[in-house]
Length: 391
Image 1 (spheres, rainbow, N blue to C red):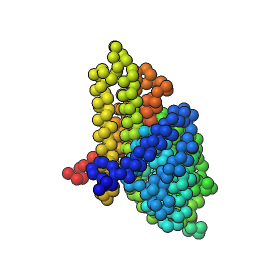
Image 2: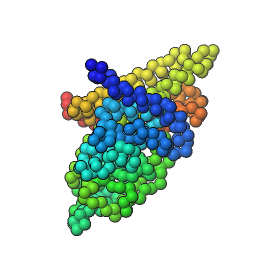
Image 3: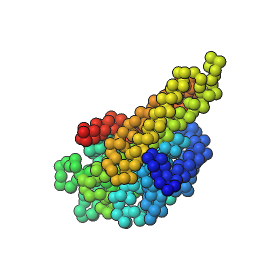
Image 4: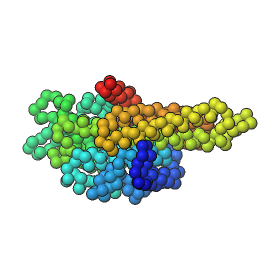
């Protein structure tokens, strides 16, 4: 059957999506990526084109105007977009985290109100989990949601940090510890997720962070000060928020791993193209053994990382527990992205250290794949725990 998937191969439909996004990334995303990075400004025209292609509805069910992509298609889109610009891929993946939360945990009212518009590209979504002192340990968050029974509302107070799409978002999924008004301190097991319009009173977006890489993707703190949210905007029962977040992040980590593959692949292609053209000692760099061995290692890392991503996606689609494999994919792919971009700069020599070539941006961007949606250290802990538990 032509549409059947065998092993890590893509179905005809998945391959068609890959080809579409690959062409889009090559023709419309990559050309403006360097300027967007230099200006630290997100390319809104690219976002509008993503919407026209239906990609802003990637994880939205078809009943609400979305694509309802499977995990493999989601990974493929992330890889191809990151090959063009990691900033654009990151912005879309966070938007998709929010639509995934709404599709999975929202009620019919939530889905009908928000998903059709988000599938069409606006409002943009933000995922508010991390805090200044609670990144790798979300259970240590201090943002609270105090229930007001008289108004049937929750009052949110706290600060979220490192929020992608912070200044662009129209709606956010916010995680907070639900608190009884009479309680002395929040229960660590009371984390709950809420849907908060960004124009709600008490929501304040802070100054955009100046970052090493991923400069075109805006990252801001968001503060909630006496922000009143109707109980109807609660997405999960009290205390269910953290497990919901971790469930959502398993798919998110597959997406980040795929993005890391895309950046690594871009660096590999740039390095091989340069090595063919640049001559040293009377011959092309591509004929020098040391360079050839670097490229061999880079190519192997890219392929191996992609296979891990595809296996994690397969497990999700089969209904299997993909947490460990997703962590393995993110760990390995992000490490590969760093090593491959580093070698790409090295192969370019002095030119690689200048902004005249894209490899320096790939190198700066790649670092964040080892940090966001779970650091390398957290991924290793997930992998170790899963390994010990299953042996």
